Amino acid sequence: MSPAQLLFLIGYRGTGKTATARLLAEKMGWRWLDADALLEERDGRSIRDIFAAEGEKFFRDRESAILQELAGLDQYVVATGGGIILRSENRERLKQGTVVWLQATSDVLWQRLQADAATAQRRPNLAQGGLAEIEELLHVRTPLYEACQDFTVDTSRLAADEVAQRICDWFRAASVEA
Ligand code: S3P
Image (cartoon, rainbow, N blue to C red; front, side, top):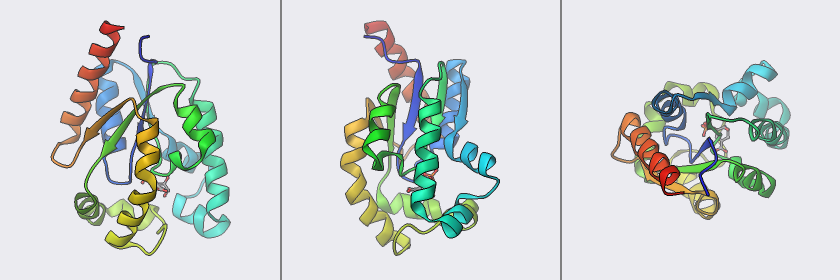
């Protein structure tokens, strides 16, 4: 069976989902969007502010509702939030598309997040913060990312354009084989 013409990028914060989505859509001749940016735009607040004012459950409910909407798109690349895989209903919904898991080691993720100005402004701490938070959450989430993915790229030593190219090559090959 041909892979669905809707690519979801999943993975931890700092794996480059948004940058890769944009570059990949360009290569595929598709459109792209960032599910978290859409959520923030609709709510009129940053995710950090939503977490602070309403708590995580409120955010996760919004995140699931947006995923439900996006799962019907065609010829789109969608960058998802790092915690999208936490709910089983979301994992089921992701499977309506083709799911690509972007991985990186915890050390690389910590370096990238420290260097990223958006981290402080937009991103709430999800546990104790720092490298320990990344290690703890990756421990819980890795089997969930794994269970959803159709294809995985280790981004630790790759630029976003190389990641996008690998996904594009894989998707084209998988479409021809089918
Ligand atoms: C989260 C990751 C964030 C955002 C929210 C929660 C998580 O998305 O959805 O802060 O649980 O890992 P990014 O992966 O785009 O930073």
